[in-house]
Image (cartoon, rainbow, N blue to C red):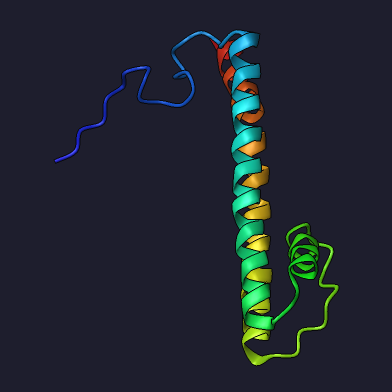
Length: 124
């Protein structure tokens, strides 16, 4: 059986009963989350580049261009002609939309937590 601890080290951010984190701690969290989001994007870009190159037979430079455009929400630039490439392109487009939403959440999490924590502290 797993027991959850209310120890401060268990939670990513301070508990509602704890004081608001310092600005330095907040900025460290923002930087950590931005780096995490960038690593997620880099991994997803790598998936797209390799996928486009091997399923659609697209040269590496065109594969990175197409994967970057899809991942950023701009849309494809290279015409996909193979069946496997079209299947990959469809899956990658859906995957990219979820990654975008996830990264927005990761980046905004420290700020939203700080706002809600501050509002909760003001109620006391």
